[in-house]
View: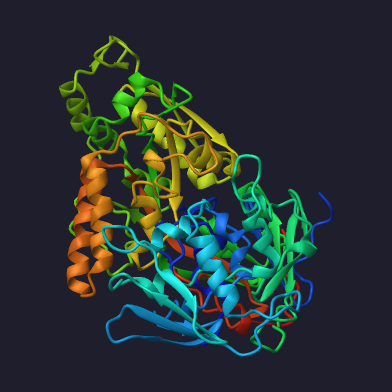
Length: 594
């Protein structure tokens, strides 16, 4: 089956299934977020969906959040079918390994073009990897998933023919195919921004193709290109006339309506203003009753890929002499028994029953439940507040007469919990977490904030205490290398400073933290599946013991789709629109109005 780049990230990036580790043709793990006249979903040749917040960037190499526009606007050399798991050609028509598995040669399709009509060539592929993804001056998460072996070497990429590009590896690298399907970028449009530096010595590329960039300056290779963008309103995509896979798609336009509240999203779908929406558990029963009258179908793709969790800031670093985390709080957060106590105090079964309406299960691992590398033997942390209290008291914490918790130095245990505003499921989870932790004496100051502000805190300013988020997910754990590598771009629980920002001093790395990073390297070196699984099993065991992430609930992948959209093959890994090039739009009866 044919597809575009969105095949590997449709559920992950369009639906923000609460955050993860591994995409299909692996992109690095990304954070998920799950005025003017509103465009009608009834219009011909377009599909209207919603997103919670504005795009953060139009530069695919710099993106760390979901949703993002690149699922529609860019493609890589290959992709992975979400139904069969087989790798399929995209910009490349074929590829071949050398006998020793150290060379991988791709042959591009003939007559590829960029959206501005310029030829897309082997030179663009070499430029994309050598000058962007493998360039240590560019703060991209993608570099982390391409590191090979103990030394963390990177592939060398060279043009070996008019349409041939060869990747040379320092040693066999098991996840190479799942790591190499990154968006290919245009050399003719971006070369100057790579070679020109700002006053701080950083490539101008770091600030290139931001959301204020004139749209006619964006050059893409995907099935769609951005037609218009109104801040806080919508992003409209139109068919790319130079896309390699002719003919023109039946769905000529895709509209992303920016709706910063899931309650409003529900209202707009029920009134017919949206064609597709993810179905959150609290709305499932209501929408199920309205399927026939509303002329839509709810698809259940089974357990979602991805993870949801809370995490404490374990970073002991300082910036300009100022600690990122108040030192006495940092002592709590870096105490494994403190983190285990928090895990025991969270009633995840209550979350499943009350917040997810039974449409989910407790989660105990950073590897997606559906992945073949998931460790089914992880016991996790059942609800046990008494166990939580005993762990805290063993570490010198004590309770006053009102049941409030204090540390050995008489500091009240109080911290700030942030999550992204507008995501009602996460807001409900945060409220329960606040209640559960207050039951063991902790004072939690819950603060919902904008998703883009939250991402900036996690990746740039690094000034936060505890957050509730998620990561995208898939089958290949190495796509989470940007999370688990010590200096990975999403090593968020102990994030190093990014290039171009003020460096940190006094940042420390724990032995268990280093062990997980080393095991990820070892797993990528192992070509035999069973041995790889043993290694990834061990990473999950360490993660469960030391809890850099305290995992919460794995929800079901549910989507409501108007019946006018024909050919839907919804899956947890691909989402409802992964095969958008095969979808057709048909006239239907008038949509149900509330």
